[in-house]
Length: 112
Image: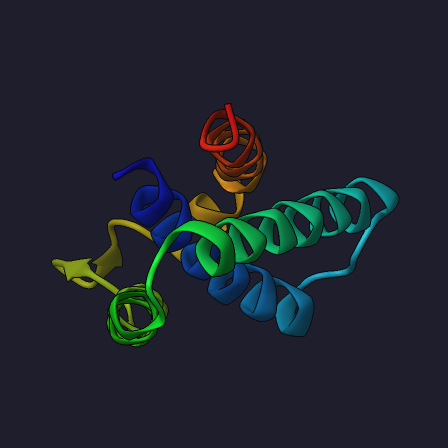
């Protein structure tokens, strides 16, 4: 179960990072987060290849890919109340460090 949670957060992180790269300037800390998440992603994929069957991982990955894409697109289009945005993409960017830490911890825990 932790693997699938980490996989969902991984896809969410990559979608947010892609939008962040297009709209914002990257810094050293953002690049460091990206490297850390890529290493965690490789760890997750190695775990999936070792312990899980591919016909479960591939459809779930595709499903997570679509869900996260729709979530980020909905936030980009905007959630407006009385003409004012309630939840913007800039608030999502603030969650990147927390998502990075969570992905890293989960990918370390599943190998224990």
